[in-house]
Amino acid sequence: MNLLQKKDPYQVYIYTCFISQLLFTLIFTVNLLYQVKTVQLDPLQLVLVGTVLEATVFIFEIPTGILSDLKSRKLSVIIGFFLIGIGFVIEGMFPFFTAVILSQVIWGIGYTFTSGSHQAWIADEIGEKRASSAFVKGAKAGNLGKVLAIPLSILAGYYTLNLPIIMGGIGLVVLSMLLIFFMKEENFKPAGKVERVSVWKNIKENMGQILYYSRVNYLMRILFLIALFFGFYSEGFDRLWIPHFIEQSGLSNLSDSQLVLLMGGVEFIVVLLTFAALHFIENSSIHQNLNQIYVALFIGSMLIIGSLIGFGFTTFAVGLVAFYIIIQISRSIMYPLESVWLNKIIPDSSTRATFFSVKGQVDAIGQIGGGPVIGVIASNFTIKIAIMVSAVLLMPVLFLYSHIMRKTRG
Image 1 (cartoon, one colour):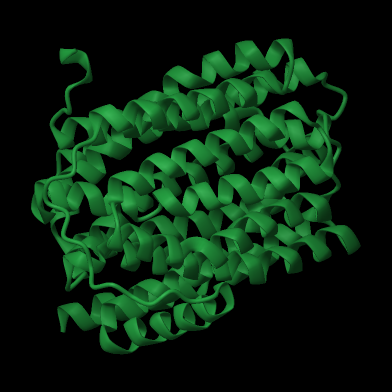
Image 2 (tube, rainbow, N blue to C red; image 1 turned 30 degrees about the horizontal axis):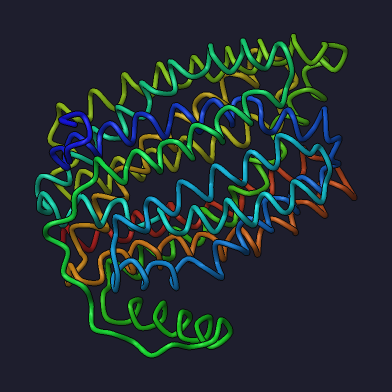
């Protein structure tokens, strides 16, 4: 029974990041390719799938964050991984547009249970200062999981495209059950109780919370604005990069198995380079200093914008791969730094999960607003133009980062 004893939260967080990212990568290495080649979704349908996911996140993000702050961060994480797993099992077993849409709703709800709750749980259990290190080390462990998952996904996907999706979904359900035994929750302090309200009233109150948090804290206002613009650009690129790559590189004659090998190889390079970059950040002082975090996020944003433009114009396979790798590495490095930034400026630990949820919801608003626009552009014009518009939508974050760097230094 010693195996089922609750472990040190720091270790549990790192291992959970490792296992969850291993399972997510097992799924995502082939997921978009599965939607394009097996389900045969067109560009507008691809973006609509993402929009449904983000709309689900928007509706449930803060309500589940409030539930986490009121009841239990541990329970929220467990429920979240369980629902995410069920959603992907459905998607992998039923290759139809309606089934894919249903799966997005289920795993989107599951994501909102984990979003914010996982970070808030570890921050409460081990303290804010140590949590900053955990965020970076967790991201690094997650990338190690990705390294191990990609060959497995390629192997399973080479046999049939939906197998890694089903395997990953089942794995996430098993992870949720293991966390019942391994997670402990000793420092959680529930927030004050709130009255039960309808979903629509919750949405109205959620918007009020976003506006309130934006008014009272300058840094949080900038962070939320940046999250909004990242939402605007990301949905189109995330859903359309594979059809654009296949179309522009002249590799449309490759079989599904060959495409799995190619895309898996690209993702393998991404995670190896990201692992090295996160190792550098972990062993530096960047994640401990807000000013250095701002500089790193500004540089990352510049690299993403430049690479989006390059990805849109390039017709050579090597160039497309190079730009895609730069975008993905930049995003992977920026995510834990953004978590550190938000964690440092949250004034009240009892609402920590809600603050993280608000940021996630702002990002969802951006994706809901930007995704359909990009999808319509891709359907009526070309995917290349849609990707260029995505780059333009992200450009305001450069001004925001420049502004905050000047203000904090001055």
